[in-house]
Image (cartoon, rainbow, N blue to C red; front, top):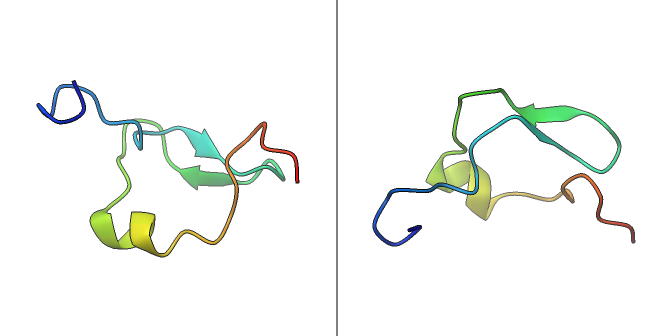
Length: 46
């Protein structure tokens, strides 16, 4: 589904592991945003 463009796992809302909203609801991260992510998504414990 991802390869066919049916499902995008980078569609918001996406929060980081500190609770900050990083991608708004309904928005999708751009290719540049994905490549430059320097934060963990919610529920990732380091």
